Image (cartoon, rainbow, N blue to C red; front, top):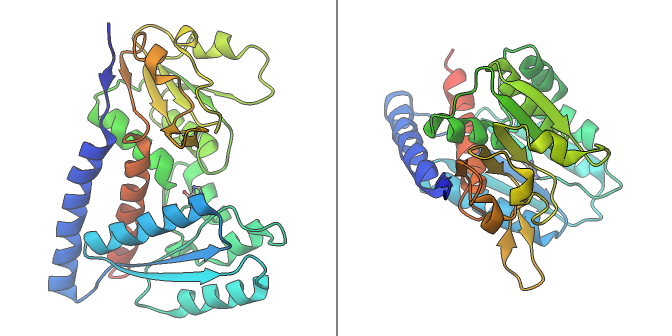
Length: 284
Ligand code: GUN
């Protein structure tokens, strides 16, 4: 059996078209254009690509975007000053600081400086707490995108064994909360997990978010499972690949997301959704 492919590009296109329509309606009826400000510090090539894609997606959906870039050696106070300025600007609805930041930055302090109402990444402690309590204000974009993909593929969540490999604040932890809220039984595995295959083999839903190329192979997957690959790794030949060995996994899984063209496009889509929601909430 070959797995059904969950096409992130197609889903992203459909959701973005809806968001563009809603943004146009907000502009027509209220005179509000959703606006996202993206801050990039340093010259990390992957971050530069992500930021470029985020800004391009905004423009394509009819959103306004602001890009602020700083050299890697910038004083943190300069970036904090810009965040304060964007916080105070009523025409800016979302603020995102691309991570990782250079080592001399206190990342938590930067994330906490963003007004929680504009924190479209959902990384501010107040928003993390709200998600944990089951009353999210902004759901972090990657796990939010994964939930949309599971929904679109009609994957049953209630009572399902969900195994997440990776415990990051950006993906693993919020992913666990979202699946828990939908009544899955959730296990989080990480680099110190003793017998990874024992856990992954039990998973009805397996989410790989570790950042290691092809570390999940077909033998580690339960037949018929839904496999969500959050990894984006660059191979020595320049090609992109996920954390899952797609060739062997697709022979075992029931459904699987490809890399590229899986979770990646959905992350940016949900960033647009959060920015639109932030803009709409200014009316309430
Ligand atoms: N770096 C990797 N993923 C993300 C993300 O979702 N948001 C931000 N701000 N930085 C990231």
